[in-house]
Image (cartoon, rainbow, N blue to C red; front, side, top):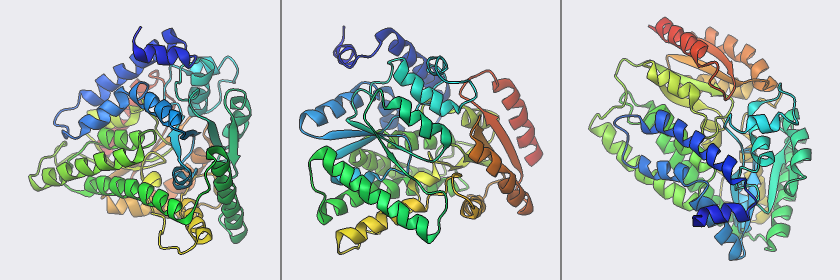
Length: 423
């Protein structure tokens, strides 16, 4: 038995199921990501981060705890990473993106529930997620009804804390959210036993801002007519951002950006110049969910923009760090996170305006609205977004799917027809 297997066994992981899960994930990775040609050399770091995500990264978190640090699990990008980092708490995402774990959740949940929720819960119920036993606390939020009720079940597996995300963006909602961020600050102080000072919070802001700046620059390269990186690789990088050490991650993205800059200068492209430029907008995509990007790019298209929580919404906007007192800096953090345009908000004109703006900036030929089955917020919002895109003369295709491979044939047919229509 290897050292990692001993670690997993100590964490209470079902070794057989876990091995099958890893085989499933790495098979997808080999077929979808590693099989690409002409990839940037710096992508090797992110490949390794995915390959070692259940090994090295878990051990790093355990080592962090042995030195007195704490680990908090998250399920949504509304959880303020800066605050956790300032308290000496390492945030790591717990969301599931694999079909493999869903049957374990369906022994408890009905089938007509969002696959992200079922995959996440199934990883815990099937004792396959090594992160869940490691975290000292998990932080949920109120962005959808399915999640809100899931936290009550997960509370039997791990200590849960829930942040209330408001449903509107009026003055009273900002006050509610600011209070929630302050309460989260208090919770992180309680968890770590460390008082968050102005300087500590500024360091946390600097760390996370650097990560977002690196990601923003990376995705800016996708605006180029010479595309130096595939949509699948760009998505992979942002997915790794959710689990990796933030400082090391930022350095690795900065190294990748230097290579991409050189590739643009030398006109090293990963797609033919005639490839149709596609934006994928809507629900998040968690490892190993690369299905839509893979279909688009194997059919000759190029995904150049991701308007999602594993794309633009994650890295957009920095926290203003020029505050001279702690309360003001916390306000700046709250304001930054309230700019995330999730479909849970009503009205949500900001998201529609944002998609139109991104479509222009990335010079897209068409938009694919990606909706996870039973994600009612994004599904209903497709109506107004489709109307706005058509009014702007931008072709749009709505795809509702899950994590399985059962619908790959029909998806290919629809996406191929969409790409042909763009001709």
